[in-house]
Length: 245
Image 1: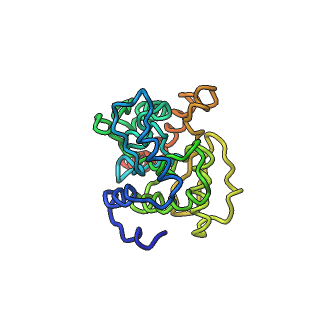
Image 2 (image 1 turned 45 degrees about the horizontal axis):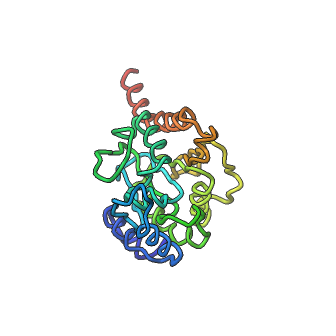
Image 3 (image 1 turned 90 degrees about the horizontal axis):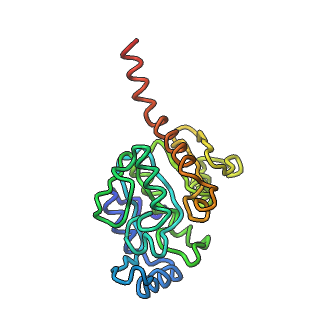
């Protein structure tokens, strides 16, 4: 992790650093061009057009790692998974599982709050054709690495294979795991990582390509989120059982 980032002691300060980042010229040019040209349906919007910080409960038990902002979604609204179909799908499931205060997310300040969940991304700028370069993912990795260090979640949900690989590569490079191949991607998979690490849960990404084709259904994502909810509630269950013994 960047030495400068290790000195950051709060999510708020980290967010400020994320928003100022201009490290990837290709991404800077693309996100700002999209914000300038806009989509006709959003021509009255003042696009965010900057890197998108994380969102949610800074003391969350669950950290959700997505891929990247959508060009006319979070790159427009400034909040991760907000303003596009993927966000509609995700926040509806989070609400049903008890992690979100409402099932919709339209813009910042719309009343949405996350409860015991925090959402980050492997990449903080919208990439052309939704395809980030390996060098861009590497540049962005310190941001979600620092988020994890500050939040210290008990569970990580990786949305899609790229997000999973980004997280596991971080663990491998820090020698927390030996190889990525020990953790193949499969929707609904749950991996107990070495001691001290969060439990890893996997889901297909809620992209339109997956949700429109039925590869990922609301019931499938809700099932993963409920498994996480049950896992996070285990300490409380043990306390209640001990008290009743």
